[in-house]
Length: 99
Image 1 (cartoon, one colour):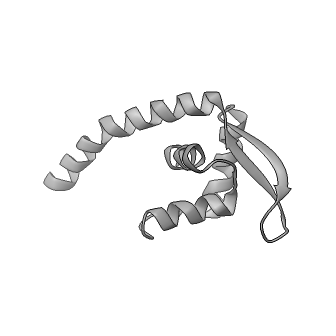
Image 2: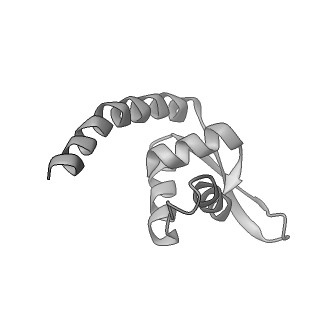
């Protein structure tokens, strides 16, 4: 989940939780759905790790929401997450092919 959230915020800039989930779902052509029950604990954890900065703001629908921005530490973590996925992807492919 960290990879998807960090990549989204790196590419799109400041977003609130619902916008993050909507973006991931839309860009993945509805193949990926991030449930709120897993998103918000992940956002909280990533904020505690220093990967995200959170601040309250108003949505386009005039609702109060917490908005997230990727930090410098978050960009470094994004690089780590992308490298990890690049290494992991062939192994997953092999297991799916031969299991």
